[in-house]
Length: 349
Image 1 (tube, one colour):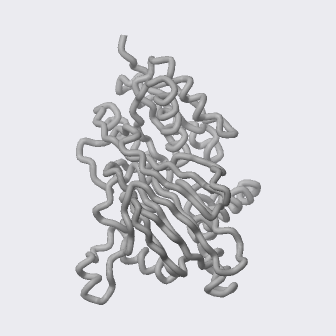
Image 2 (cartoon, one colour):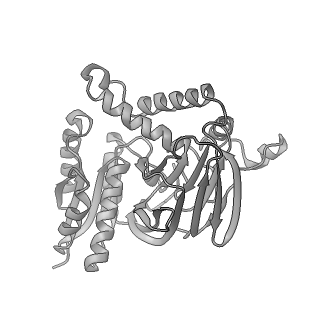
Image 3 (cartoon, helix red, strand yellow):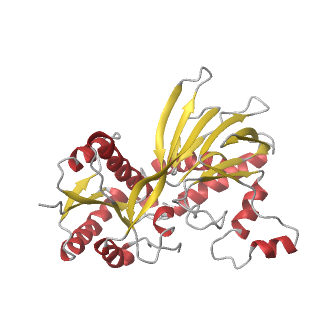
């Protein structure tokens, strides 16, 4: 008998329990579509991935479906990959995104939120598939030993964006302890507050305090960038759900884009010029003397970070979560490493 079960991975306690009602709706919709859903709750302390792989290895699973934000996407995808590595069992990942950025979904034409639930279930039922590249990152110490290794599916970054995310996480924990505040100060508001705070700190502390330099080797070609506020390695065409820094970027071409940012003004100009709904083209930018976003593209990326002064560690993040800070990283594109279920007409939205 062929596998039929659809495993729905979700966190029923997310957003003060409101997710539980939405999960019930998703289960009802999946059942009505004949997808035989089975609920799988995320687990604390990083235990979701191994437990999900164990469940997949029972060989009755046709697909895994994530319900939630980027963190649930990552745990679901890692569970699928672990089951394939351990037992040779491979299943595709369906998407019912509920988060704010949703780079993976929007890069393939999948909207987020409760209003998109019915259409996204139809997409899963239709069963169209596409491969997606996956990133592997290693933080390396001075002796060349691996400090930590992990997979990522959207982007990894070093510098300002990672520092903003670290403060967002701290602010989110503090807000969660205040019942009245947490009802309205969350998600994008918390992130925006952290971003403003970090930029103000950088200005008050002096423009050079947060700057760093790097040596980046992309497929054997060495590039040096000096005086950066941020360095981003991007896997999907969308960044933060709203920006397209490299228009011909693809999530399945076996390569990542490495993008340097040299100042807060550089970030602001990129945010304005590279917004996905901005009608300004690269040709338009060149007419007014602005070149396209500088980047390098490749499969194997080695990053060495340097700070000219004795400032704080240069923070790192993967898929919006804090990663270990180091001065040396190795990033590899794992070509066609994850099957995802997508609409017939796959295009960014």
